[in-house]
Length: 271
Image (cartoon, rainbow, N blue to C red; front, top):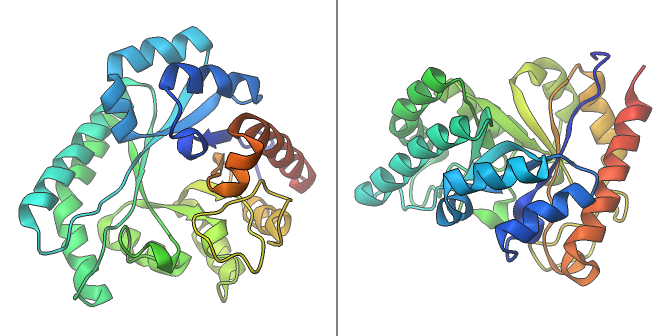
């Protein structure tokens, strides 16, 4: 691992209901200066206005998130969402972010291979645009219960789809912590990980989404994070929180504790 400490980022998912001026001001109080936001929220606020807001609070944008939701047979819907992603790449570059991560959309009646082929073909122009603007793209692995947003539910599937598209992956450890051969996969493909996400889960919970502060639940998150860092990952570690536990505690204290936990684990994992 590099001697440089991995930057810690906070995801805007914990504060989706907040107005952006209050949200961006809050992030500085958590001890973080790097944030990730949903593209739809940024567009609603205004790209130029967000740039001014980030500068005012000395906060940097780490990434934008774009979710595909169109049915695979909905050509107009896909065309609209691909165009939005393409603009999102341009917006990210304007705001100083060099990453846009995305979900793969639903597969519906298609096989995994059929859905992957259509996805790769549809986003090929966006991949070209991203290269032109110096912005990286990454596809996220998600929980199977989120099949309305994704057919990519394991780290291995995310890597396979990323290979097909010529992009990287957003590795969400919350969604793949029990995956067979995960350590070996990470060791072999760590260079393809564009962003790493952490959060926690309490076994027995049946409500989703419900992500706890890392260290508050039952996942071996410290060990998982350490395994990725020791494989040579030098990129951003992103805290993604949402759900009832975070709402009950409050986004600000939950994120503040998460940032502290993540920095401590990064320090502990360094040689």
